[in-house]
Length: 481
Image (cartoon, rainbow, N blue to C red; front, side):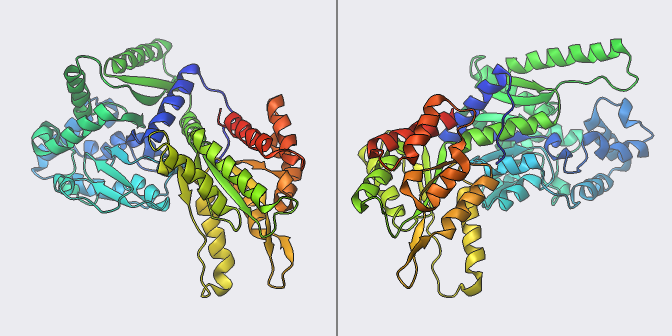
């Protein structure tokens, strides 16, 4: 997770806040158009139909109704076999998922809609370790995949089933008859979720009809959705009057989308889409704190003071609406769980069990030489879920009884740094945590004076448990803001 330092417009900042809230509430959804897969090497509609248009003696660059081209070809040939083969040839190619796919797949989004025929979204979700349910036909809507993490609704079909892909005017005109369940489901999601349209042109007649119908049903007060759209650029050798005309067209188009409940975020470059998605990712990740630490010896602390501090800190994080992830480190993990669970159970309406996730390390005598690599992968899987990492103690007892630094805790620090997490080391707990505090200075540069003071308190062995807990909470809240 790369840290996002760039400033955005107030409109984009407001959207990031809104979408982050939707992610936390489980109501965030994505609608992906061809533009999302373009940087992976897939063609858009115009390029898909270029050869088909040429076969008809038409110039695709001069056509405005691309759906009609596919229909004309079917009318002339009385078969869609050539169209189907073109679809298979273009969208069966082996392309890599792009950065935007990866970001979206890594977020806690359960609902993805797309008009794309490719498998990029599904592949990205699987790469993120998620169990994906694909809905590309009416028949597939009737079944449910157990334990799925995300559902991808492919409303125009899939490259693996080209005969039933939506391509011609016949397909579009019969959509509400043949695929009514897709319309019903999409309507429900547009009413109940916050949809982000990415790489989508809104030229699809089905989407336009659904959005218009929802607006009427909701008495012209549709739910707010968002679209990221690139500002038009002047083409090489384009006359100024033609460019200004296209700009006016886009301005009217943007205003009309607001009538349908879609707020457009206009950006200057395609890379701005990635910047916005990265900002959403960081905003969401900084609500999740990874607590790293192990302790066979709590010196100079007493065991009771250490447990009190860790429990109070974990409880404070839950009360401040943070999520906690933990590898259940020796001597530290039990207190993290205790403090978090007590708080959640004391007020189940205010706090949720979803705020606490534990991932104990696999213990097996059969790991042998693979132990280091298995543990490394396990640490990476845990840490990538968070945006902030807190480090405590960091020692372990060897077989001969000696207390030594924990290499595992330091490895977790290195992974967190590589993944771009914000790190806080409680230096007063000694050992590896003290090393990290000395290395990083707890990132006080550019922070408030209160943040710097909190760092000093966390490094002072004479600080009280109460002051240290307050300091941790001050720092994580400032990072989140």
